[in-house]
Length: 165
Ligand code: FES
Ligand code: FES
Image (cartoon, rainbow, N blue to C red; front, side, top):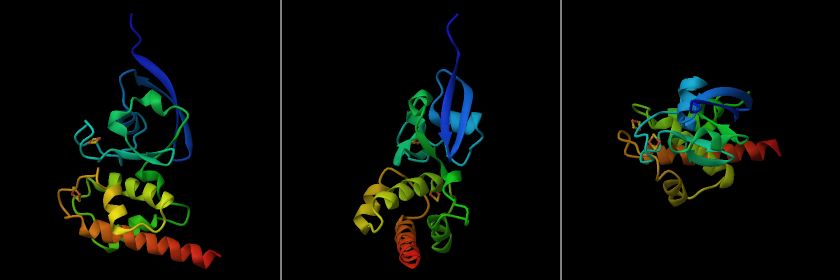
């Protein structure tokens, strides 16, 4: 009889998990339906919309296209993992303050793409922000407020870093 489940070991938001999953499951299906991390959204399920974006070893990654076994032993961060011990991530605060989320379906993926950008490029230009978010589709906001929010979060993170020196 063909094997129908696999045991996979995942590191998600700093926690180690060992879970049984159907062999055909993607990382997205495992996050949502096995680990109950439903912040990561299932949109098109074919790589077109970016709603399922998570951060994999520091890089924005479409979880709907990744067989779950490919994430074994790698560090996965979902929108649930962006906040720190002091509270929400500056991106989350600035999306709130700038009105950058409306229906919010795209927002978790956009936050993950933006967080990965700010990790590698702390002071991005508008063009770099646009490029980093080019795979994340939003039907509601018109994008300007999203870009404003990312710029404001970058400024805030840099000020915090200066103050900490
Ligand atoms: S759900 Fe993955 S790109 Fe749309
Ligand atoms: S806020 Fe609705 S899709 Fe982006």
